Image (cartoon, rainbow over all chains, first blue to last red; front, side):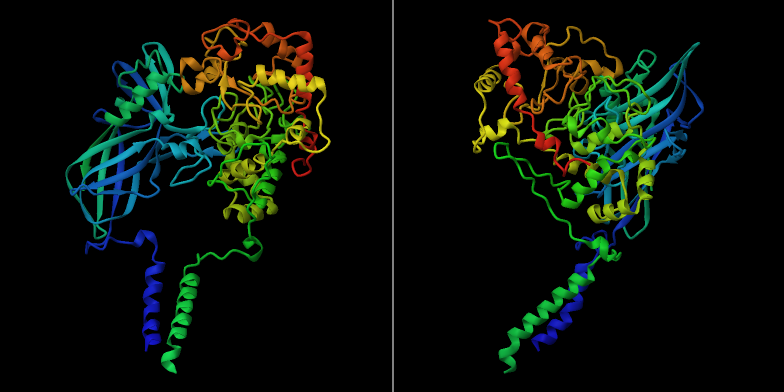
Length: 262
Length: 362
């Protein structure tokens, strides 16, 4: 009799033990986990951002060839204050022209602004938090892999001219003031410049039942350089420590804003 | 009877459940039998007088991983033009240094601004690699020379492709890392091999471990005493390095910020003024094999190095206090006899069993 009961138990054990992690749902809610698209729409003030196009900013002409940054450690916070950390959240947001390398390989031109998140516990969400850059553990060891982290896309510093670590953000282009033209290259990196952005949503966002929710953020490129005289400092790298700290803090507090939710 | 057997039934059913659960949870992709070979964890055989070695859970050593790393270390496929391997600038017969001040054998032919460091006991280097400590671990460090255009200048995507054409590599990467050939796995394997570059069997070591029949001469012992009293502030412990950064008074001016601060020492990594002109302490082990000396190889001989410490130490705000050994004045006082004794002792740190170790050389 006992043996018979145990036989009945086997399938139960099998099914529960073999479920994949991302299928696991909280027991407390009847609703199934939801999914969501997190979008980063690049803008310059009120205009849409685009590569290879002239923009006038504070009287100077800017023409961008690249906008790239790592978004990591995405956390959604519901109205009860419960946080959901998206697992393996390392995403490279980018708009870049094709660039050649030292071999037959090229980095292809690419525009990527959407991140698909799934397995989000059903509920009403009020705010979102994410970081720009890569946290210390992964930043210090390029051989560890999580999410989209990779050494192959030009967003690492593997030159001995710097710390071997990730480039957190990179904006490149041409800067022209009157007859003076300069190459613009504004990069952030280093553990001290790993910054977290917190944004409240304009209204509660319901996620669940596999409906497609969305949070659309504006990435205001004009704010990235705020507080830096880019004519005198058109190239920001590790040796421009204070300018880099300003840019990193701009990413944390000024660059991102919620445009809309759905 | 049936009742008495109940516990037996229970146990056998339980076993069945366990078997079913385990077998049903196996990953779907089945690996070929030859790839499923067991990995053999390796615990490094440390010299008895050496400090313990911290575990490295992110890249545990295995016999197979070390063997793969050794193949890669000596493979010229790791350079853009398939001409250079790691060993081109880290030659085993020179204790994994290259014998020239500033190398220009890299892909570009440009002269490098810094001297190739010797790879000796790097498993203990837990305070940064490179002369300024710019890399936190051996794994990340390897990406530097691999991709630098003045060094191996190897595109990493192309490297994965190139190695993927070699069936033996495909098999080994699958076995060791359960993955295809990925640049992260490449540097992990190289780092595993590098951690086996242990030199701890010099005449000094055998003397200090009191191994039978190993004596140092009067002069060598005098040299040891002098080194202990004058040099061990930086060349500390049995590794003969404190793995830290010091300004040893080579230069007076660190205002040249070109090459992203390359001439400013540790400062270019920390951006602390106190780190201007500081470079990593190299080990004194095998020092007779690793000429020329200093981060830029400026001194051709050990004699020249001692002359520097004796009366050429430059005084700047960051010159190390340990070098003020002449009644508060910078420099280390050394008589001709003392220098001779020190040289005699330093030769006792040469470890031919390291440079001729079959498991380390090609």
